[in-house]
Structure formats: C-alpha cells, structure tokens
Image 1 (spheres, rainbow, N blue to C red):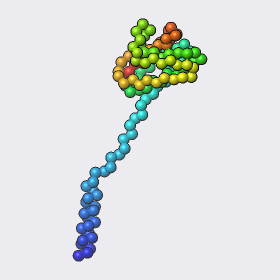
Image 2: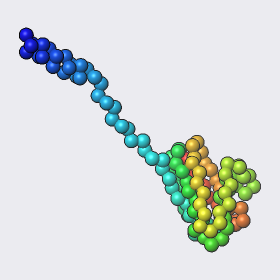
Image 3: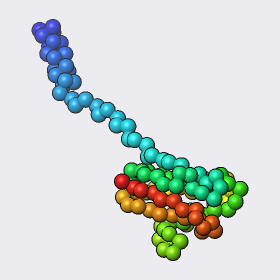
Image 4: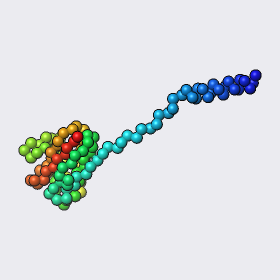
Length: 118
C-alpha cells in the first residue's frame, strides 16, 4: 500500500511538472543603432547618411573650430535641433520618424548635411 501511495505521489508530481509552461526565454532587444558624423574641417563627414527609424546620429566636432549642428536649411531652420559644438564636443539625436532631415553649420556657409530616415 505504501509503495502504491509513493508511486501515485511521484506520478502526480511528474504530471504537475509536465503541465507547467516552460519559462519564457529572455528576448534580447536589439540595441539602438548609432552612426557617427565627424567635422574634420568645414565639412560633415559623411555629408549624407541613410538610416532606419530609431537610429541615433552622433555628430563629433573633430576640428579646431567652433561649429553647430542646426536642423533645416539656412533659409528655413526647423528648430528640431540646434547644437553649438566647441572642438572635441559632440551632440546626438535619435530620429524616430521617417523623412529627409537637412542640417547645416551656422557660421560656415557650404557646411551642410542630410539624414535620410527610412
């Protein structure tokens, strides 16, 4: 009788364990993408980047002059971002909406760039 009770107990425990859902595997969320644009002089390098929604662009002033990263064109700034950067400083912006985003450096005519977000 004791053997039968032990057998039923083990069978019950086994069946209960078998009916439990497996623990969920942790899902690795992809880390947000980042791309760098440098300012090695009076240019943005690269001048144009194409990225996916959610990507962060990091501008780095690698020059020995002051620059800005100002959203929009010279005659139509958008106000989306306007970062003054002394030599060695950097600025980051994450693009959450698709579109074409032009930007420029206020003090340096011809220092223009574009971010295309797909």
